[in-house]
Every structure is written in C-alpha cells, then in structure tokens.
Length: 113
Image (cartoon, rainbow, N blue to C red; front, side, top):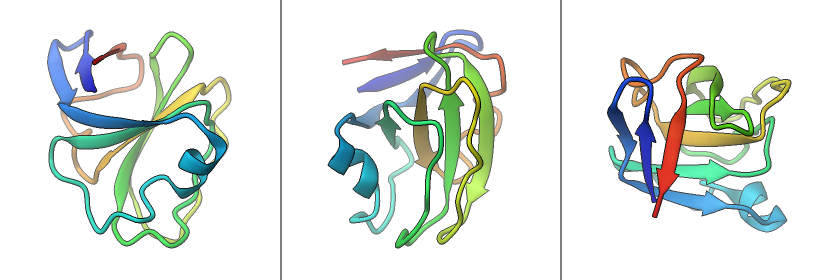
C-alpha cells in the first residue's frame, strides 16, 4: 500500500505491507534481511514493538487512530524494545533514516491501496 504524509505533501512509502493478525505482528520483519527504500510495514493494533531477532535497524513511527504521528523512534537497533506509546493505535516500520525530513510528530498520514 502507499503511505503519504498529508501534512507535508510527501510520499513516505510506496510498498508498505500490513500486519494485522497476532502472528503477523509478532514476526513482523524478522524473516526479512533488509527493507528497500520504498518498503515498510504497518502493524495494527500496536503500541510497542520489539526488535528481537531483527537483522537491521528501522525507524518506528507510532500513529494514533486518526493516523497522526505521535512519536518517531529513529534508527531503532536490533535486540531493543520501544517504549509503550500512550494513545498509539499502530506502528509504521520504515528503513532506518527514511523518516528524516519526511515525518514529524503531529503530521497526519494517509494509507491507500
């Protein structure tokens, strides 16, 4: 799916997948060796993530129910945990560095197929 930043009028990800079942959220990007520049993964519902068994760092973008950015954890490394983000409804996982200049707290995103 396409992820677009409506606030800044910028594309965020052209090839985002969706993880909306328990097992797809649990394993997330673990099977992957890397993410392409335009790839991402939307986990919903989700307010905290783990990086156990991950092979690469990511940018984690926490969104509320209105798809407003609540918090960005840039360059989250393997074998780390995010904090619990109050009010988060989902997390958009992006390649490390992808959020820089494209996203900020308060921005509103749009997802489309």
